[in-house]
Length: 73
Image (tube, rainbow, N blue to C red; front, side, top):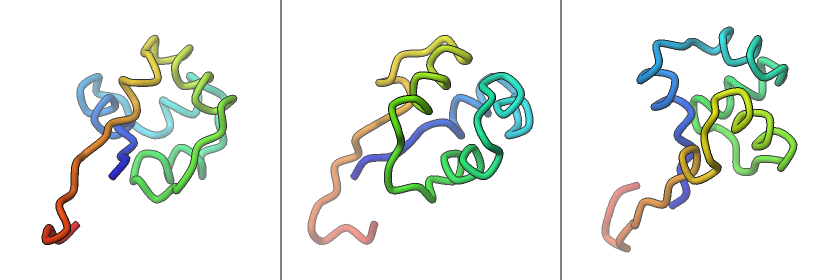
């Protein structure tokens, strides 16, 4: 399973969704969806804006979690 880790970065840095919107210029609904893992995709321009504004690499925002067939994920 692929998970977007924006919420973890926000928690580590003491940022809220409004902070991310102001820093990145990304629409607040998009930030909300990304922070709650409600999105099923992300556009490269959005990923680029987050990487630039948070000074992270794409791999810092996207993580792979192995799910086994009998896990309830």
